[in-house]
Length: 141
Image (cartoon, rainbow, N blue to C red; front, side):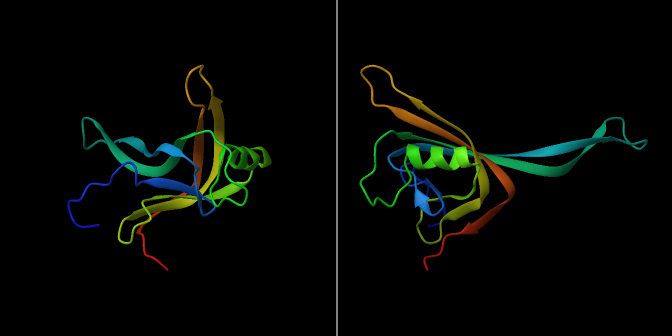
């Protein structure tokens, strides 16, 4: 991506096990750092020291059955992985060469489906990172 160019929401996607989420409508990633407060005799206040971090990812999609042999994940696929308690490889990127790539291993923490009268059904997913979150630039292979 050229310097200063803004990522478009429609381009930023997640993939689970190398397959993007079918009919994805949104995705987000969150990283939080534990700060250890230390009091010393040399300061009036406390000194904060960064410790471990944790990360999570969430996504929403329209709920639809993918075509037979489809190469994306749908609600059913992710629910099966969650019920099996399987750790999954997860990425968040545009998939364009030079763009940021965030990836790691995670567990599917929750799945939900919502179906309001008069609206399309939507699905929501949350993932809890397991270990490190790697930050790189996407390069085509």
